Each structure stands twice: as C-alpha cells, then as structure tokens.
Image 1 (cartoon, rainbow, N blue to C red):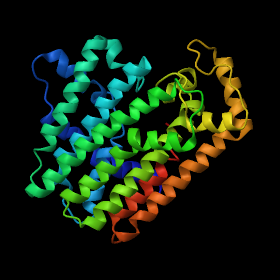
Image 2 (cartoon, rainbow, N blue to C red):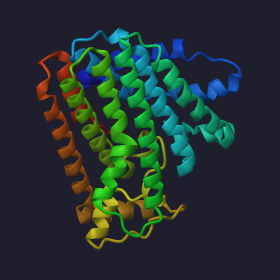
Image 3 (cartoon, rainbow, N blue to C red):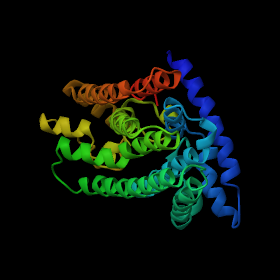
Image 4 (cartoon, one colour):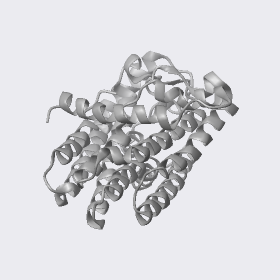
Length: 324
C-alpha cells in the first residue's frame, strides 16, 4: 500500500474520531476551560493512536463504529500529555500555534490537561461491551497513564544525569510513548472481540512501533524545517534531552556546544546537525527505529490477512518514513 493510500485510510478513521470528539467532548461551562481542552484537537493532528485502535478492532473482526468512545479516549490522553509536556519543556509552539500554556497560562493549561485526563476515563466507559472486557480496558488505561507519567519523570531526570545508557533511554521511551500505542492496539482488540493471543500480539505491535516512532521523532526534531515541524528545530538538544542520537554521539566522543543551551543561532543548530550526521549518530537512530518497526510488524503474523492488517503494517512503516 502506498503512503498516499495510507493517509487516506488514516484520515477516514480520524474523521470518525473528530466527529466523536465534538459529540463526546462538547464545550461546557466554564467555556474557556473547554476551549483550552479542545484547542489542540481543533489545531489538527494525525489521530494515529485512535486510528490504531480502530484498525486493531477491524483486524480482529470487530465493528469500528462500536469503539469510537475508546478511540476518542486515547486521543484525549494523548493530548493531555502534549499539554503537560509543553509546560515542562517550556515549548512555545505546538502544531504551529501558541502552546496551551502560552495562550491560557500555566494554571489554565494544567487544568485543561487534568480535565482531559479525567474525561478520557468517563468517555472510555461509554463504550458498550461485555463488563469483563470493559473492566480490562479501564484497568489497562489506568496502568498506561501511570507508566506515561513514570516515563516523563525518567525523561526529566535524565537531564540531570551525566550519562544515560541506551537501555535506560529505551525504558523511558517504552513508558512515555510506546505504551499508549500499545494500549490503543490492545484495547481495540479487546473491544473488537479478539482472543487473548491477538490482543497480546497487538499490544506488542503497538509498543514496538511506538518506540520506533519516538526514536524517529527525535530525528525529525533535528532535520525538519521549522515551518513544517511546528516548533523550534533542535529543541531537544537545547533542552538537554538525552535522546538516542545524543547517547550514541557521546559514546563516540562527539561533543555539542549547544547541548543544554536555550539561546542559540540557526547557524549553531546547523553546525550541530552536521556534526551529528558526520558522527553517524543520526543514521544509527534511524536504523534502530527501523529495527523496532520491523519487529513490531512481525508480531502481526498471528492475525488473519485482512485490509486492516495491511493498513497496520503500512502505518508502522509510515512512522519512520514521515516528514513531520
């Protein structure tokens, strides 16, 4: 399946989620709180996680329209993490627009994120499924949200460490990013009536492609023009983040003068990029991301051959082929 077809398939399912967001997360009182909560949804987004959930449902023979509350719930969790990430990273832009904390202040952004988090469980509970399957999904979402916070804590803590190993970085990425993709895929399988083996395979698929996604996201932070990226290029380096690129560079005795510095010129960023390219660190990160993607795709061998499975395989490839 070519990428343009994949985008069409993702958009088709994303539009179902967009409509569900309007219905399940209407503007309430106080208006500004709900406007802040809806802000990033209205700004766009690819809806990759809810699309993964819907596709997993289809892949095990379920009806995609039956899982729209669950798909909406994972997108709410994703956006709650984005709002709080931007606060912690002090990022002023998100999707090319002022971040929520820039537009509504720190207190408003914290409340918007917290309310999205709580609403996600309420909306997930609106899914009509067997009580045992619903309980499994609610429990899983709770565990995953905890792990996301653990991953974020590790990420912040790494900034204070002189040395972070690749294994430590992968642990952080699994928790911060991988588990929400994993939960999306597994919840889709559970609510779609899949077997335990199918649900576990889809969890593994989501976890592995989520790691590949995050590693490649770190690459895009360096190589993507700012007008496409929607935020300052090289922000991870300036924030002192211990990405796989940085870890590989340091292990090969490469130093970056701009690491951990807030105010640097475009020329300095371009020079740092050249250093990382010459060191092989960017290529190493891309290769590692592809390895995780391929391993994730292999976990889908247990599923019957369907269009949904083919789209899930294409989605995995897209995560390390996208331009932003």
